[in-house]
Amino acid sequence: MSSAGLRAVFHGWWVVAACFVIAAFSWSLGLYGASVYLQAITAAKGWPVSQVASAITLLFLVSAVAQKSVGRSIARWGPRPVLSLGALALAAGPCLIGQVSAPWQIYPCFVVLGLGWAILSTTGITATVAPWFERHQGRSMTVAMMGASLGAILGVPLLLLGLQQLGLGLGLAVAGLTSVAVLLPLIGRMLRFRSPAALGLAPDGGVASARDTAARPPVTVAGGQRLWSTAIGFALAMLVQIGFITHHVVLAAPLLGSAGAGLLVSATGLAAFVGRLVLAGIVDRVDPRRLAASMLLLQVAALLVMAWWPLIPVLIGASLVYGYTIGHVTTLSPIVVRREFGAEQFGALYGQAATLIGLTSAFGPALFGLLRDGFGSYRPGLLIAATLVLAASLTLFVGGGSSPRQAVGR
Image (tube, rainbow, N blue to C red; front, side):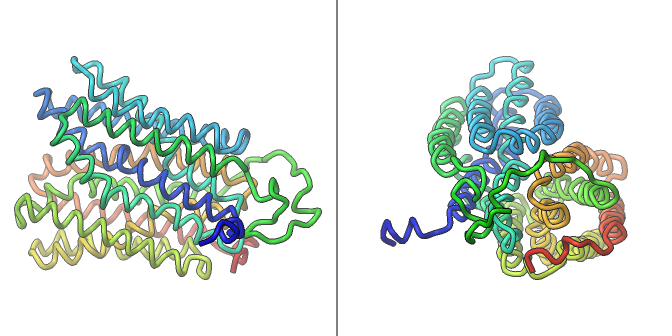
């Protein structure tokens, strides 16, 4: 494409492309990287798994608490300074983790990483994209979040390879420095404008009217039933989802062996990518709240069949179905808030919802572990998880109803 052609592309899509790359690094070093750190630190240092796992839990708790501030900060100062801080923290976390020499030192390291993960995960990415689109609001957020799948498919294997070849300290230092070397220039270049109004344009690249470019009143944060039904529904869903992802290898290994379980997890990640790809094509033509509730019903079915029929074909099929729904569920919570409340209030409102979602989902791995140890198998835990996801689906359905914003972007 010529330079003139590149300039003709609406800048909002360059923002989406930048957020795609940000998501790939953030999920690689944040959510999916956590399992790599757990294995690498315990193997290299010989420290108890429970101690390192508790530090990783702190990562997710710090991230959850920070989500509200992330949304408000982007609404106030714009994405470039906020996401630049996130890029520095995301890089510093792994670099510091690789240099620890005593168990207590891992806790502040994961606090730093938790701050980076908070800023560069769902709230930060979707709050950055939200002002740029109206008609393509769902598609733009979905494409940006597809970088998360790339983090699972390519980022984690590359991180593991780096640690295997270079060792814990140098491997994590290279990973952290590579991320900041890529992300800081990208954020500085692509996120220098806060909204299309700064370019004299309307959302989606249309010609701005006087109403579009006029100064808007300060954000007024309000929520009510719609916001909190969204937050509670997705909090319950993500509680189960994070727990399932964390325990998937252990759950599958008795039937498939360690290598087979690893392949199944990779296939599940690929199914999540397919789910996001499908979602990008349909999300602006459907009610995202009802679509999310429907996907949660598919998760209920997948969890139930895994619990009642622990057979290899059932496990593989149910895992792929569950993976497909992951691609929808992890992306739809910000889209629901954006669709129902608009761009002006999105950062502050979704920050509130993301705090509850993050605080709740942080306990998913521990919940699955306690149920597994308490009952001696995963079957009762899977049945309880299915019940929680059913409650999540009903919460989204009941908390919906008619809304004047549902037609936006159709």
